Image (cartoon, rainbow, N blue to C red):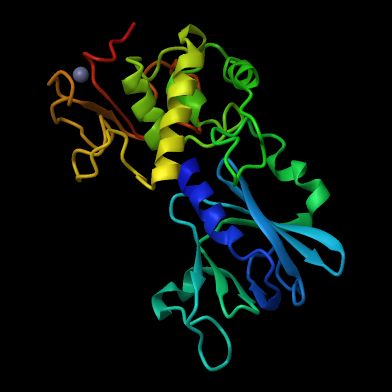
Length: 286
Ligand SMILES: [Zn+2]
């Protein structure tokens, strides 16, 4: 999931601030059995792809921490069954990780969320402290007020030989870019995705990425990087393998996940090597 989608979720969850938990069913091993009844929701913030829902339980400040991958989601449900549980369609039950019912009659339902934890709010750094600056810092839903470009560049260049696309996906460098933004940014800056990150001028790339992802968040454009929402025309290169580049007509190339042409064979498959699309003319190999 991309940072703009996570911040959009944070904004939705933040509307629950001020409500009180009347029933909580947390199925994740790390939090199972925790009794959250009576907790007041303080608010929800995001850092990159991490969500922090803050609670006040009799003066104890707690944070429900979750991390959203591609298919995980928090949704709000207003329909409930006779026993008070949210009326979740049967086929979604195996994915249910959390159901928190509030005194407003709304339930917060977590589906397919692999990372869910409860910690003291003052210890939030333990779960987000390793992350780089949030590309959406400064947004009302962000924990960070300002994006520290210098810090992001320093972190991205820690391993200057690392391929650009991998560095952008590693949340310890900058937090919030997913595969779509990383691949599209390489195209828009005319860089071959496996260019060593140390050879790339990162300041303008980060400024462009922040401008685009902020626009997407503020205007709800979601998954378009071209400004065109029509399917097949909403991305520059992503999902367009063997189709003509929208800029120059050259056929777009595709590299499946887990491979990285720039890396020596002895190097283990990088964990951030995901599916990559690029135009060999607009993004020439150096
Ligand atoms: Zn091209």
